[in-house]
Image 1 (cartoon, rainbow, N blue to C red):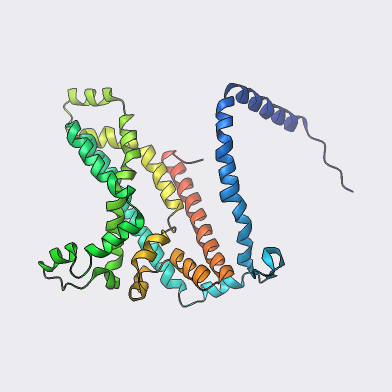
Image 2 (image 1 turned 90 degrees about the horizontal axis):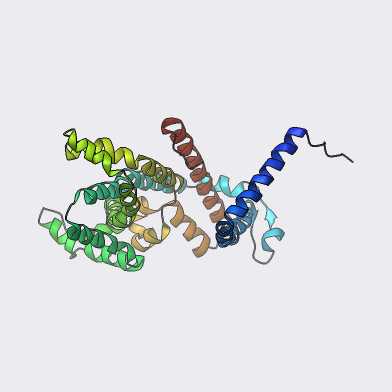
Length: 318
C-alpha cells in the first residue's frame, strides 16, 4: 500500500496562505458569498449534473436498460456522423450562418450604440431605444410568424421587392434566400437589446476626455475614433470572445420554425439535425454524439479566442 508523500514546507505554506486568505475574504464579503450560493446551485443542478447524461453518446442507449445498463459502442456514433451524407451539409450551413452572424450581427449593436450616443435630443434617444428593444420581447413564435407573413408571396417585403423586379415567390421557399432572411431578422430582433451593454460601457467613459478633445479642435468623428471606440474596446473584446464560444450554437428554435424540406439544403444546422434525430427519430445516442461534437468545437473556439485576445490586447475572460 502506497503512502502519501509528506507535504513540503512550500505546499503547506501555500495551502495555509490560501486558507487564511479565503477565511479573511469570507469574513469581509459574507453577504456576497451567500448570494453566490443560489447561482452555484443553479449551475450545478441544471448545467453540470446533466452532463452525466453525455455518456450515452458512447453507448447504444436503451430506455429499458438505462444509462449505465446500455451497451458501450465507443466512438461508433461519431464515426457514423462524420461519414454520413449530412455531415458536410449541416457543418457548412452552421459555419456559414455563424460567420455571417459575426460579420453582420456582432457589429450592428455596436454601431447602434455609437449612433445613439451621438444623439443629443434625449426624447428622440429614448424613442429610438424603446423601438429597438421591442422586437426582443416578442415571442419567438410570433416573430417567426411575422417573418413568414412578411416574406410570403403576397407579404409586405415581397410586394416591395416585386416593384424592383423580384418574381414574387415566397422567400422562405427559396434555399438561397434563407440565410439572408435569417440574419436580417436576427439583427432586427436583437440589435436593440444587445446594444444595452455597449451603451452602458459608453456611459463609463470619462467626459473630461471629450472636453479636452473639443478644446483641441477634434471633430465628432475623431472623438468617436480616438476616445469612444478605445473606451469600449475591452467590452467589445469580451463580448466577441463570448460570441466565439457560442459560434456553432445556432439556435434550433428559430431554424425549426422557419425552415422546411425545400430549404434543408441551406437551412439545416447541427442543432436542428440533433433535434430531428434525437426527438423525432429517437436516435438519442447518435444525437448526443452530434451535440457533444458541437460543444467540443465551441470549447476549442472559446479557448482559442481567449488566448489570442490575451496575447494581442491583454483582455481575456481568464
